Image (cartoon, rainbow, N blue to C red; front, side, top):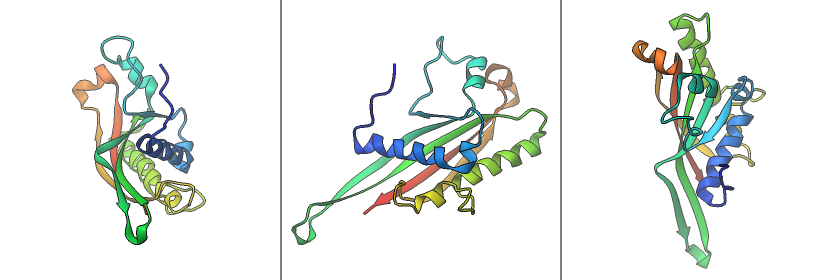
Length: 173
């Protein structure tokens, strides 16, 4: 079943983040990368198999964080002006590249998600470089919350993967 169109400010904000993520240099150059909203596609059985999870990666999962959307009305001077702000989460997962030892895999993953956050290069933009452009979501801050790698005792069940959680705060008005 396909997702319904993003028709509310809450869902349009998540789609705006998806568009920004797809416009970053690092994400757009990641072969096979997909973006999902709120949940992964449903599994073929009760839960995703290792093959399904490996096949879904690399992916980003975007959702509105708890207490993640706020609208304020400013009635100064008799105007009805609405200001909105909120918090979004991104979980990024990738399969660990073959041939990279633990340190190499950690560094290449840090380089990937770090460049997605902010590349420091306007010609190869990250989210923060794009946030300064009028057509994009005005992200005020991005915080790295956690990065992990599959525990060795889980690799046979879900594959060898890395994931990172990023918290984004945006504000209009």
